[in-house]
Image (cartoon, rainbow, N blue to C red; front, side):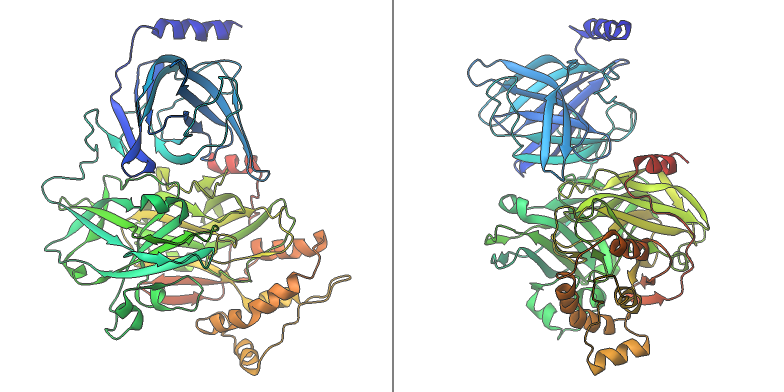
Length: 622
């Protein structure tokens, strides 16, 4: 009781003493011409926040403990249509993605206090104040650190202050330091509306690469499209200091992610180059992307901010040697409604001739085998898969090592949680990244704080936890949103020649496991053509292009076999061990487009973390 009275007294002290809103974050809204704006200011004890959202309904901002919706501490408000009363509420969000349930309940202790509010024909604005650290266990403190922020809105207000809150019509996420002097980050603005990043000015330049008005016909749920464009003439070296997605507003619900690659020399008679844009995917048999364009330049996925800056120490290099070279833009469209539309989305690179200390690079790591050798059994509450960047590959990093500054873990709709683990020899170091409440619709790049030093010979393990409780058929790895992936993209400096570092499970080892007899089950014994049998006998089944032929031949048989079998605990455990113990995989290093296999890895002995939160916290605190 004494603590509660103390909190109330401190809040009363603030009333009548407005805090200047000296920080502004302008970020993605439901349309490019209607951004969301979050303004704030702090003193020693309090924070004052103003939300300005393009809606006539309710608006909300939540502090998320792990980046997902669940357990978010929410500032909620609206302006009543009948009375024009400004309603400000303190709420707590509980989300169960497995049951597709969300409950945005009122806190027993209302810590947000109304300052002002209004709305016009386009925007609703509310302003409120709260203690930085309240006495309420349902609240999260505002800290001097980057915090996960989720914001959402609905086009209509609640019917009453205590009515059930209907699902948002728009939701996005970002990261903000509300307290520290280092709060300026992507999308931040000064109070006069100018970008705090200084993207424009003397010596600045913008490069824009788009998909080129591609027609999505609505024939498939999942579509990948690529477009190849030339880099304009660059007279000197520049650093890209930020990227910005260029998204067609009408198509935003269907754009799942975007990747941008730089290309090596492409023959002028290459059919895909002549066409300019073409269907593509990681596993559709097209070798164009990895053959000619293996160098990742940038990535965006739904849930990321609308401007993504790099740390002040580093920039992405663009120079005269890239003039006339080609850039490939790949868009992944998730279109379950089978809608037909034309899209011209892409990426903007903000360049500066004020070069920074280091060139930056991006490493793609994790599980590279997007096929039936990644099998998730149905009916599993939690099933774990790992992909590794083996130490033989990381020996290629500079002797002083690299510095990792941000990360994004990528799974699809069955993803529960994921971590990027860091090993030096047999010793496990603190986690590089941990997304403990994975949300397919909130896949924002997450800062690695503090920046992580990664030395040659260190190892990365990307561990992904999935649920298949609602599935009656096994789920395979693949590029479709209803298939699964386990990848991480790490941004770092200084730039290295190593572009991709991962593993794929060996086809012979997988077949040996699945062909073992089970009680009351027939073993998986696929029919092999003479060509397939020769590939297996030669030991080349995991090297391209032989592996692609093996997958094309075996995957339909695997799908037919697994759809007819039952999965007991005795069946699941050997498969779980196969994916998380031993070395049943082939390491892959991609250096400047040249793939080098690492056949005989010797990993340290470690247990999968699974979904046990205390294990994550233990490693994070080391």
